[in-house]
Amino acid sequence: MPVSDQPQVLLATLAWPVEVVGAAVVVERIVLPQGAESDLPDDESVVAVAANHPQRHDVRMVSAVLRTGANVNAMRFKAHDDDGSVAIAPDLVPQLNAAMLATFA
Figure 1 (spheres, one colour):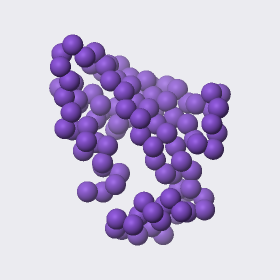
Figure 2 (cartoon, rainbow, N blue to C red):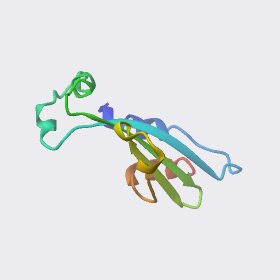
Figure 3 (cartoon, helix red, strand yellow):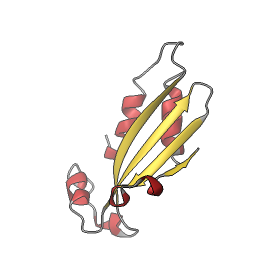
Figure 4 (cartoon, rainbow, N blue to C red):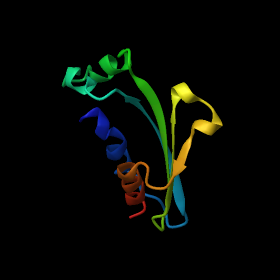
């Protein structure tokens, strides 16, 4: 399974009882500059190579979703670890939000 699909695959195995009105998940990712992706291997070593890339940035993403479909997201680069550098808005990570919402189906 591609590394990028792991949170969605895990979330697809979850289900909540009707009493649960919302849930949140935190995902950490390695982000590389445009063009660096073409240098990455197409196998399991991709994470190690990306983690050691000199231009990598670590980002933390939060998806909080209500059973109603409402969501809010937060994103922060590790290099900017202060409250003022957190982006907070709905729909910043739509695929993760959709995977979270599906846990209520």
